[in-house]
Image 1 (cartoon, rainbow, N blue to C red):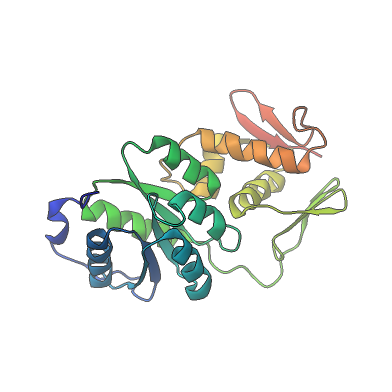
Image 2 (cartoon, rainbow, N blue to C red):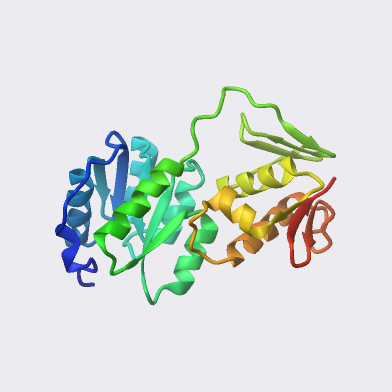
Length: 246
């Protein structure tokens, strides 16, 4: 694969980012791309660490606790989609996927598994840095040590412990699933539109597929409903969105 970054990437003035103390993990098996991204991110004031394959990326994400991960889809050992899936088991760190134009299926899958955004190669430096800044600034601030659990009927969601209990049984959720269910439960009995869910869970400038919400809703139903084909808690309100109901 050729270097897929626009040739003007190194031109233009650079402005130090206000997030100069942020640590970014960049993962790509192409040395030229890896070093180019590292150079420009460091020049913008970020601390940068790198990995060349998906398995090392997962290990570094767990060990280094970066503030943002830039993850190529096409990686050796463990591809970017699987690496994203593994990282989401222990971290909600923002992840920007690097994709090629012909990787539409992988791109959608990555977003469904927990990536926050994607940048399509080839890309311009200003676009790339803008995405980085947006994701870092949108990252949720630290939550207080204790938040009251949200209890609706037989379902209890505890934000402090990131814990879901359904009819007395603890249920494991991925970070995006947890955030989605939280928005729905906080609006118990009210319709929440798909766009509102995208804004609150994925970010207001999310450019992925609208189908992403539907896929996560389906996964949630499979985990909390007695019969996911006939849901009683997460209801679809035709042409409007979704409603949580006890």
